[in-house]
Image 1: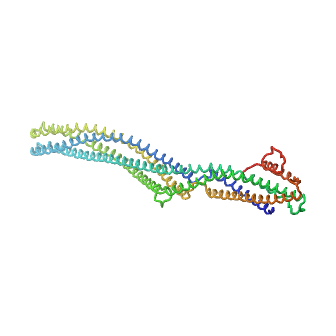
Image 2 (image 1 turned 90 degrees about the vertical axis):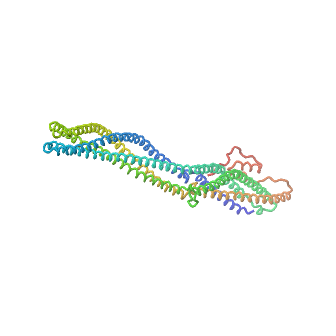
Image 3 (image 1 turned 120 degrees about the vertical axis):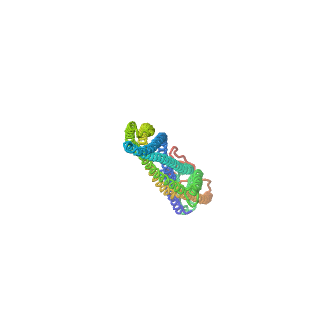
Length: 572
């Protein structure tokens, strides 16, 4: 056996062992460093943030619309009740208009009679002419009043129509908003299940890695044990250099046998430690590799279902977000429509107030006409009472008097109804407009919030696209490091094979030396030989592992000091 070559090989093995273990010492802590994160954690955080923003957005929308309906409905019920007042006014105005038509006919007949009376009927004719003119004014104003009333009713009906549009816009916003919220929540819910499953399986990978690392605490024991073997080889003597058949030759042969036996004991100890550690490690590392394969398969399924657009899966993240964003654009369009409807509503309420005031203005023109009619009626009665030539129109004067009184009563009633209508409607619409302005401000805020959420949704889509474009379930380089661990372990396993080869070579050398020993003993005609070389005990003093010292004591046949600490066995 070439001792120098063996020492060289043992040095290479020691250096390789140290390199492998140093490499593993760097790899295992980095494999266990979860703080480096992965796509899964980033994806989950992004989705949860989107879920929270979606919740806040939908909550603001719901609170505004529910509160709005509570205020709109009572206001419109009260406004509807005012139309009944307009119906009463309509009948009264129609009555006044009809009376004015009758008065004009009566005045026309009376004028014909007064003309036939010649000069004696001239005074009555002028009075009747004024009466006819006033009746015509009465007719025109009452007709104008009816026209304004119809316009007022039209505006009120327009208000109802606009209100219906508002409710439809609200309903549309609520429906689209609810659908958008549900779509986002459904997408997140669909994603979170597989993500949680992936995360759970990933977490299962780390304990076996930790356990595998703990079961590879071999660096020092291999290094120290190899030093022991090398020390044994260094102390070897070459019997061929001694006098053949001499005591020195026999002593060298026996000494070398003892050193080889001790070296084999040390190699057995190394192999035993490596074998025991690798048995446990293999069990844990197999769990790691099996889990990695399972996770890779689960990741591939996740990518096919949620990330790969070419798969055509309906759960694809980007496709679903595109659909959701498209629907949210429609929501923002509805907000624009709603804003325009609110403007129409404010304009129409202003028009109702203006028409109500116009009706009052027209009505105020009727009062002076009625006053002058009363004055003309009195003059007419006086003229008829003193002028025998026109006694035949007495009945017409009486009819005229009745019609004027009837119209006057109608005007009194109309004045009360119209004043009440204008006051109550003005107050009601003033409250309504005030609420509209408040509602409009809230709606602008809501639209601003929705726009901000829409922008956030688009940013989230960009972030998700960036995440899923480089989707990794482990930190960067994790699987390559696992592959490097496996290669290093293969290298350490190869070291174990080399050590077994050295053991076999040493065993063969022992057999050769034993044959030589036996030959020398026979030459000297003795049965045993006590080794005279004192270096064996000096060699043992250099050993740092107690078990190896004890083995040397058994081989050398002497006691060693007990209680000495074994060599420290550490991984790093």
